Length: 508
Image 1 (tube, helix red, strand yellow):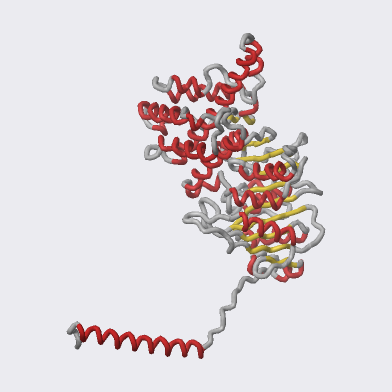
Image 2: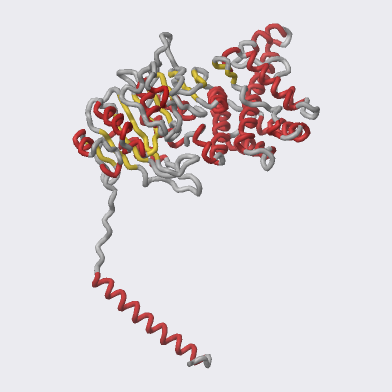
């Protein structure tokens, strides 16, 4: 029996592969090369594993073997595989050879690796000057090929029976790149604990469609899909949809999906607000059962000038301010909810809860339409690229009551050096409280419409959840007694010290 590779082994080997670039190329540049090489190595290993199996079974029939290989999930043209590139690693031109191989793979796999002319590998070139002059580039890429050829990164299905191990390795890399990515990290990564929280709250069911209109690397989207699989006997009866504006991040999302075995997906490339791509056959916005996102916080230049003429009428409740696009994403998401089953969870900065002017008017209309279901305050320093605390807004189209649940989960977390995290206990408490919809002292409050109206539709959580802790009363008599005892002890110690000094002949 072939020895199975562990998650820890893959993670360590992948992170060690990054050493090839460290000190020479910045992490936000070499990230693309490592992630793409992982994808190439994976599909090459699967191809080789299946080829060996077919050859063993149909060894005297090469035409049948070739026909079987053409039915593979990914087709590899002759010479466009990792092993061919590895064999030629010592010759000049590594960058050019890798680029040609990736282009051939795209062409051989039809629309699977393309979207309206945009290809998964379009924004990445291994022949780029970013890797240095020709000699340095060739050396770096030779080392990279050698790193991925090591036994610990043999990703054949016979060694990796659970595809999640490879997908999790990809996620491990993305998370570590996000940790060192500064402000840009939030563009492509939502912490897994936050994704897990959203997925549990929204509780996708078999047969439902799930959408993330600002999907980044698609980790949140896949967490929602996994809820169906975990809670319904391994069911894969769901469909994943997403859109991502940044080309390289869209590529990550596509590769991430395939590495997790998520073939039933549609991820579009483009600006969700200016140019929504998830449309039906009548060019109307598609509707979904579950919509969730961690959009960019307070995005400037989000498309304000075009909003008045929006053909999808997403801004009928009001146009968000020019320099803060938070409500643009919220309104888009609400416009894509199915009427009876639609529910959504969106991560927002706290300003969304209380800012006035056009945002205040939009917020009031959403509340008066009885769409807002819950407001959940999260701890600070959960998200890469920003230390500010965020909140989750939950909206539902199937609400039976008009109250709104407020949860202040901002004080319960596991502290980290650079990032705080939500523990399993923290997540479970939030989800259980959300489902119970009852007051919890200093943690949650079920607010009536009248309360919210009296607060002028301001959703700032401290207005509803009182977390004030009274200081214990000071017993002045006890303090006086303790002070006298301390003075007496101090006098005794000073007398002992004087005695020691006299013995040493140091008396004054």
